[in-house]
Image (tube, rainbow over all chains, first blue to last red; front, top):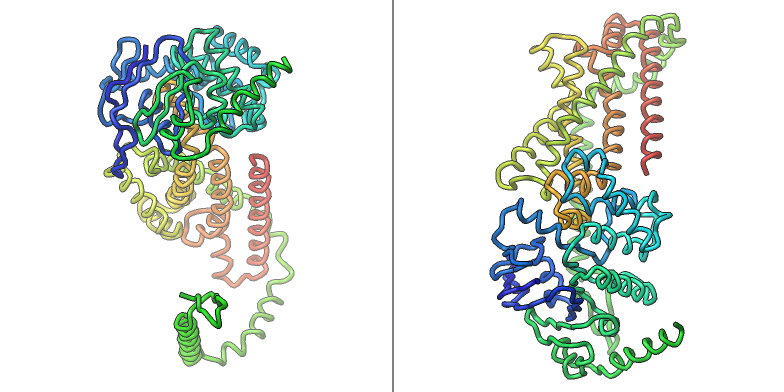
Length: 265
Length: 271
């Protein structure tokens, strides 16, 4: 459904963030993008919805090529790609409801959004989503009154109310504690399977990624170093992605918590 | 390097010997310049008038007290004009300052090469000229009166408000703007959802702060004939009616205190 062809991004400083990346994401697949800081993970997902303009290459989303389209068409395709951010990126001074409804801005005209008169169907959907993530009671609170985990749930609602085909998720758990991180990852993956969404999830925590996704892609210095199922991540592979380190503990950790969760459940 | 090795112990000082010498030399030059200037000013002063000053001040004080309280009946209208000049001037200034600020801020300007320098020029030009001088110019153009005062205050305030506002716009959290952009929102929707909520507190603070300043500035505009209580002040000073002058100063003081109180309340409410 999403296909990247020889995607290159060179920043004005001369740093080559992406070196001819080829990637194919089929419908409904949740993919984790791992790699060291500065490997180009954030740049990659921002090149897909053109928050960062790629230097060359092609991005295909369900038969449309995105790098060459005009601003109107770009806005229409951005509606099909929900984005979730590391620091939540909620508009702090707006209410939870306004933040969720801002996901519909691509569908609603200027005056209706200015006067906050969203169509009833959008409001219904917003309430449904807030209920689904357990924040219905918070709808009227201001976004900066919420905790980190709650804010990220609002961020997820904002992405989902767009009714997207694809989720672009940038470090969703990097600012959260370990327990909340797992809850958020589980929520994202559950919602993806409920709605048949594809997702690209940038993530630092290798163990967490292995726990939840079907496919892992490792990025190093802007090039794909590994592409395979989570259980194919061996110490050698991690060394190829991140560099020399003792990886046994990281991989072992994956087994333990899973068992622990199952034991509790 | 301020690190030296003495008998195997590493000694660290903030400055090297050369740097300390240079610093002392700098202080020496500063002191010399200060004493030279003191001497020049002293030579140019007629010390007789200075020694006389406490007696004259005491004389004016006895003439000015008590204030001529019944004169207050003639001050109601002028102080109302003064407050109106300040309020209307601030409102007009804000109408112009908001678009100028968006054109001047690096992250919202449509063109950093052409539009931004023009916006910055407007800010510098309106800010660099005192409102009293704007009033003098405007009285020559549109004649004396309250209207000239309103426009003078408005022009002077555009640059001030626009400068503070564009700095606030440049400091917003880009991630929130990015998030709204990623939903497929249009340029104007990004503005009202991503940018405006972030700068609203700064905007309210700037508006009441400038209003507060403008109350003080508009009290003197009358001195040059641009309306308000300054007109009464200047005529009272001209006829040496000290009891009236002291009453006018008291009225101005209370207007300024009122302005301070309102702006403190507003700022308290938005934070």
